[in-house]
Length: 182
Ligand SMILES: CCCCC/C=C\C/C=C\C/C=C\C/C=C\CCCC(=O)SCCNC(=O)CCNC(=O)[C@H](O)C(C)(C)COP(=O)(O)OP(=O)(O)OC[C@H]1O[C@@H](n2cnc3c(N)ncnc32)[C@H](O)[C@@H]1OP(=O)(O)O
Image (spheres, protein in one colour):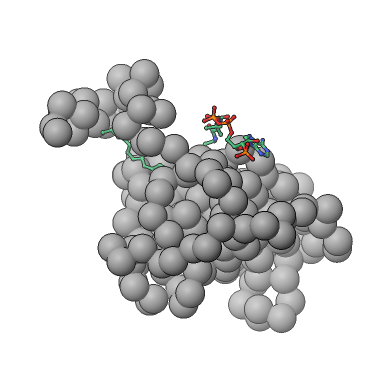
């Protein structure tokens, strides 16, 4: 499947952030309530993210019956949620938090309920605030991808970006307390 996603050629230099998780280390959920990776999210995917070599993030998740879309296979929106979140972790390898501005998914093979799905997300480059990422999903054989995705994430000042919405969070009190710290 060919994607029309275009990465600019005039990219900015990037470096792995010194405080980023090391290769093989688990990456902390950016928000424990996150529907994708938050381990406190009751209904969520609870993806476990790991930093890879260079500018890679890996993750895996089981595909339980509650993720069904077509009969016996994963719902496309669940898959795009997982892609969104795995690629959302890539900017943290180079430093800044970022939110997804653009996401596209190519669905290549049906993904059965009961399978275990593996993801690898990779940084393609950064241009100003835009971070370009791609991701591949497979069912155990990296040479047999079942879906691929591309995203543009835009870096943010997290405190400012979420300031007006913290009271909607199930962790509102904690986030407000964090906001009042210097
Ligand atoms: C103490 C309290 C702190 C609490 C925080 C705690 C923890 C949180 C930490 C981190 C969280 C961060 C990451 C989360 C990780 C994973 C979650 C999964 C990812 C998601 O699920 S996240 C949710 C869905 N996501 C959104 O909810 C975004 C809604 N959206 C917006 O909030 C704005 O839309 C924004 C900010 C994206 C941009 O707005 P803006 O005004 O800041 O910037 P602007 O528009 O100037 O764009 C700047 C440059 O991006 C280019 N650009 C913009 N949009 C584009 C598009 N669609 N396609 C191609 N390029 C685009 C422009 O063309 C320009 O490019 P250029 O430099 O070339 O001019």
